[in-house]
Image 1 (cartoon, rainbow, N blue to C red):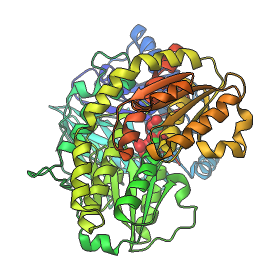
Image 2: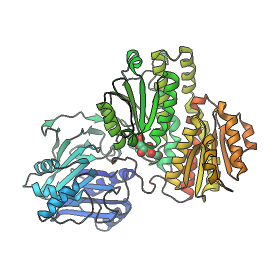
Image 3: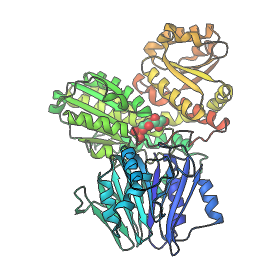
Image 4: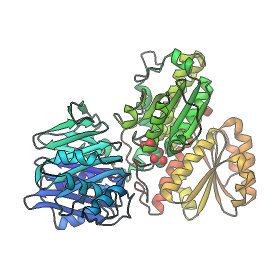
Length: 609
Ligand code: F6R
């Protein structure tokens, strides 16, 4: 939520910051702003709406300068407007601040500052930070930021510049992500890697409560005790292409089509010389597994849906009681967590605050934490005992696709590996299942090729509907949940997923003439029951789109439209059956003229509770 960029060097700050903000628009896009220091002082420009509004404004009247900060916003406190946009300044406009996160105690600080004669322009929590720094400022910006920070509660990544300190940027991170980029005679600060990857691949992942001071000649990092510390410099192996559309019309489409490659990257990098699974960052032993008597899987949205499939796999192969919970609810539910509990945390970004909070709660109670994340060095990975990195590459589109399928691969690999290690999965089964997994990316590729046209046709049929239902049983129900989320978030059609057998207990009342129902029917043992449920909704007027395996040709006689996908073991069908819902939501969103990659009200990385 919200993206920030800072630059100091010899380049054109406006250009570099705008370029960085464009890469961060996935974090929020309801307004944007920039502040730059030049010979005539500190200049700020902010505009409600997409970044292009700000860019157009600056085109007509650019701000020159080689030090500055910028922000793209996802509104929390105060509606999207010019005045609520960042950067926020002190009253004289000599100090500018950009912020990602929430200052929880801003009201009491605001009251105090108003009492001291400060006047506020915006409704945001961030503006207090600008005034607070002003209050403590007596020439030393770093000192003033330290003093202001002592007063703040909440989550924040902040970058600050001051007119009277034209050769420095001070930035600080607490719970919200922030990275430092090291170039040749130039330095960057940003919420995420793609923002500055064009300029440098040398990055420092800042730790919680780290503060940095960037000058034209170098940088210093101060740890939580305010003493100077050394942090590792990481060389990012992605190239700029990885964070660009590479000829696709949208990031989402590119990411859907990257899935076979992402699945292979995640899987084949972790096979030893004998072709068996080797997990490099996971130190869990047979003894540890024997000691684990309960597993919780937590995540939000799509990551939670991957966790539902993970639960099935762990229970099947590990024979351990497993519960999957929504991260934002996890801490409020009654759970039995102790040293014998394994908590598996799933997060593409590794920065989702609800997930991070659930992780910390569980760790405090003694649980061992294993995380599945796509971002090396993310907060989730740093707070975990063991990490499984999905090698999906950067996921930019707000709607998650390749992160989901690689999270599934992570669960398949973990369940197989742990099952064999523990002895609850026989070697023969392990070999057979792993062999099938090795060929799955090809089946995903074939499915992509075969369902693209039909997903366009179905998109045209459903585009004007106001509501739609997904049905499934067993693992297909989990795919239904993910399909419904995808369609909701980018097509804005109200879509609900139901276990097919549950419909008759109430929801079937909503089915009327022409209501579209997408029935996922890939689980062979449950197929006949699914067919009966499809007939029930058909009899009440539903327009049914069936998704099944090639062998179930008879489904054509029951459905209005049938999509056939590749065959595999039941447990692997979620990896194949999700492709049609992904493409369907993409094409529906496109036909409706929505912004596919940046749907309304959403942001990619949710760093507020
Ligand atoms: C949906 C989507 C979200 C995320 C959720 C968790 O397409 O992308 O539901 O899955 O916000 O994000 P991460 O995985 O970064 O924790």
